[in-house]
Image 1 (cartoon, each protein chain N blue to C red):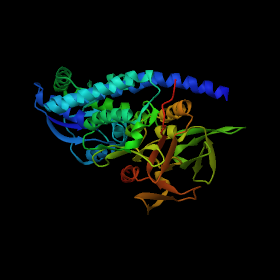
Image 2 (image 1 turned 135 degrees about the horizontal axis):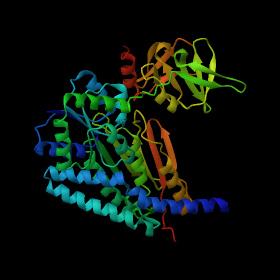
Image 3 (image 1 turned 180 degrees about the vertical axis):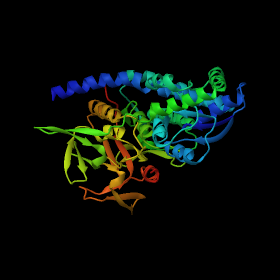
Image 4 (image 1 turned 60 degrees about the horizontal axis):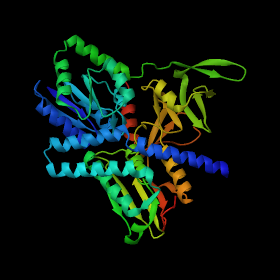
Length: 252
Length: 203
């Protein structure tokens, strides 16, 4: 059986590999060891799916759930965690199992046996469930804009970008109008369709269709130009640049 | 002014409680055991014993910290070395520490467990991977200060909001020493400056 390990702590990788090697359920071949969201997304975009993925929750560059938002995972996932109360609850629903670290021989073998006994239908169902648990399927199609004397619905497809300044969030539409939004950019980036919108930085969420071109900026950063005037230059940080490139290329 | 002192006192009680409940937090406890597990799995007897010794030192120091206000820099750095040994095993090959202290300043004082929250913050808020290893520098200056500094390597998305650890440290420092810690975030480096004291604070 081919396995991928996603884990950022060197020690945890060593421990997991050791128990995998010693297990008596089935031989496990580790085809990749990944340590970050970036690396994982990159890997799963091109590499064939393994038979199982062991996934730690706190990765080098953020929480592992983000991976499911950025790439389709077509393999059963077994989460591993040292201590995560909230996470454990979430996983009981969909994951075959979660393993507590340090992973013991008994708990690992139980998880592998469960996996081994899966029918193809059960396997597919499991994969579907895991993906849907973490993909933002609560995407909003429309926002309600509240003015002092009226309110109106604003379809998200009309929005070119969101901008925040002085703790106020404003949506800018293709007709040149501005709309006050009473949600933070953090909340919006969770609720909006990740295919269409990208959180560029602290100030901006930009829509794919509003992008005119992109300049290379100093410090390995990018500067994004929209088809309309914006209040300040939109800079994509060095860390976010790989994410942004993936997002730009992912149009289907 | 009085109100401020009261507030600082409350924060002080809160932080000594946090020192116990927060520092030996479940994540740290279990991840430390994970480090031990990996050494045993690798059959590294010498390192396992060293690790176990340092783990005991770390727990002992933290558990005794509520009886103390200030300690010498030498004592605190001894603790930091034990703590970073554990982290070094967990993040082998991607997390590095450099500790450099002027001999004379080793006998100066600072509030106990001042450096720990800074290391924890650096580990929590930065990307640490083979591609982007993190180095944390701890060193003294000619102005009798201790600096903890690291290159800023932000995560794609923060796990959770931070800032509380620093705010607590600032409050505790102020209450105990009357001095302020300085925080700077410049040229891609995050740097916290702790003023050292030439005498312990009396209870």
